[in-house]
Length: 171
Image (cartoon, rainbow, N blue to C red; front, side):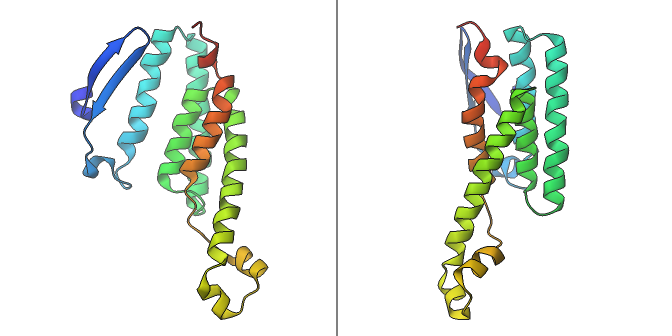
């Protein structure tokens, strides 16, 4: 599998593993990003099995990953998310499991909302908008900025991860 995916295990020890992967733009680009999602999702299963996660919890995590996939592609259909955002949200749902995924989604939503407002405010201050004579409030409301939701996912993950099953494992 790792030969096909293009990575090698460079070091493995008790509870840790180091991987090396060559950047391949054709496989890892924005439009062929299924490899990102596939690797993140596929690595869940050996981690779950090796850590002793119960089978019912693995099944619930798979279901928990499917729900954000549906929600993410719904947001993608409305132009709110990119396809990569939807896949990343699904992979996060798989790893967070139930009920920690709810905290992840709330934190991610709050961080994404703040980020979208910040990007809209920055976009509204452009000289072009000033020349058109729009008020600042109207410019903020009308702004349709490209928001990098990956940052919001990272904030949500950092805040929610301490409450996951993974953190309850004995050290």
